[in-house]
Amino acid sequence: MKNKPKINVYCGESIESSSENGTEIHPISQVKNALRMVEKSIKLKKDLTAYSNTPEFVSSIKYICELKEVEVEFFLNGESQGNDIEKIFEDFNKSYYLLDNILGIEK
Image (cartoon, rainbow, N blue to C red):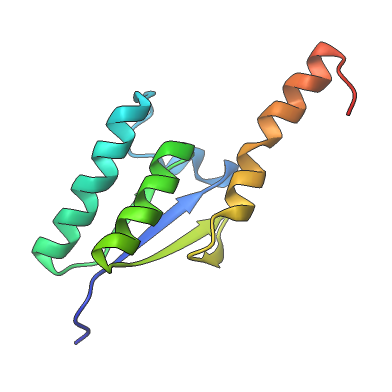
């Protein structure tokens, strides 16, 4: 049995139907939720799974896990990213490119 729990975080458009909570949550609440999840995982000594497309939750869970020495693995559209969130944020940024396109702004 391993000593430290692990958090799995699934991101990307493919998780929209898997989201446990279909409502929008304030960024501060996302940070608090990430902290609660890590603390719960440590307390229960159990792996947990989250579904999130919010930058605040993804970055918070990454750095809180790092601080608390909890393993974290991120998935983007079903593919493991390890603990690297760079491609996830590239995926999040697609919304800005879409908005630029709608507004007629060329890059």
